Image 1 (cartoon, rainbow, N blue to C red):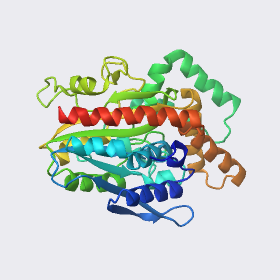
Image 2: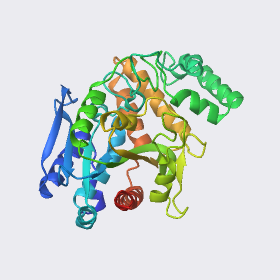
Image 3: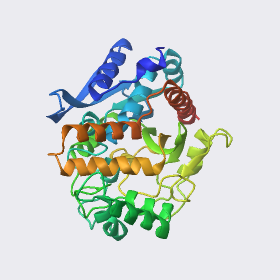
Image 4: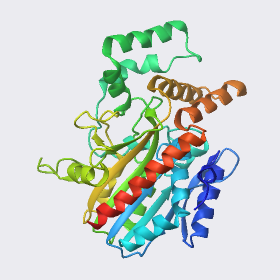
Length: 371
């Protein structure tokens, strides 16, 4: 086991190096899915895949990071620590569980300090059926001109307009409109895309290959930036009803595995218990398509950093910068720092909270898969 501080990194390149090194130390093979683009310093970008366990394991735990780019600073640290954790690895082996680590699902966003992919797409809104009519979100369309003003920092008039919307609509309604996912404004926040992204297509290929023999799959997707600082909210992400409209049993199963007798509650976006609003195009639902033979139990582990208004402000600034690449280097550096701080708290206390809670979730997932 390594020191917690040594598991976390200050950049994508460093995070990848630590993950690759941890896999090598554990004696595990690396399967890099190389991205067609390069990082800001010319570095190779990749979704790195490592499997700890036999290829024919019937029980599979997926641990993924970096769906939202810059959030990989948090998730990568959990994965690196886990690969160095002999007790954890022995536990999974003893229960007959193979662990599949997916490092930096969105490496381009991670390397560029962005939450979105190179197409400005929110990967966790990109898993919709693009052959059908895409979900409508008229509430976002009404907000779009206010969220992305022509200048940054925003004018007092723009700030007052946004505060006015907050007062008239309320925080929950505003959050739902912004974060649900939208498919009409390619330059906007939480854009779900017009087609599957590279990360989307690559992930499906990996799931199809690595999940071929699994009968039971647990998926823990690591995120940051929502909720109270340092608290890891356990959000159920699976389908709560089946194709016939009946209770799938997935939420009850997730709560049995991870709620710790109500000490660590598992929330749901569907019943309003989560700090997250319901969203469209969830990434984990791809496992239903690519591994239809397996029972899926999916959890988003979301670690809080800053208050929601500060995180939203960072996202607005980042999208503005994407639309104005001619901005001064000083302003660009400030916005990149703002994004990093919105999704990663650079303190030993926060990192310790992340590791302790994530480690508990991983142990519980193995027990759940083996029940």
